[in-house]
Length: 101
Image (cartoon, rainbow, N blue to C red; front, side, top):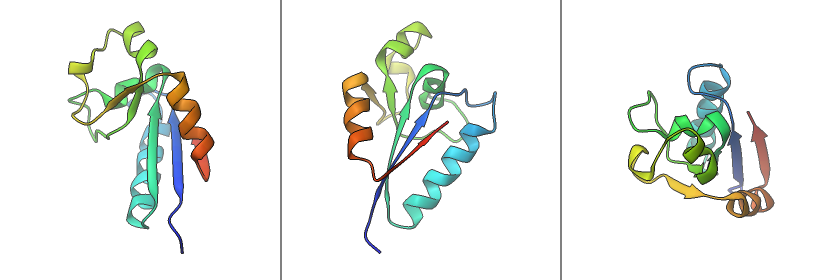
């Protein structure tokens, strides 16, 4: 089986919905199977990339949504990349599959 790229677009809070936990479990399973995973956090989903969260993940965090929620680059887990709409569009265009939560 050849490696595929999965993009997970996460817009829900880490603790408010089961969605976040499901998305992270699917990401781990895809990585275990040898696939590439790109997680793009937007809206309240940017909190999943915040340092100190349970089960943090390296992700792309939307810059505008971070500012709206009072987050800065220093408040994110190491390795998290701050991104804009153009980066999100490029990730989605290059994906073999996309999940939206």
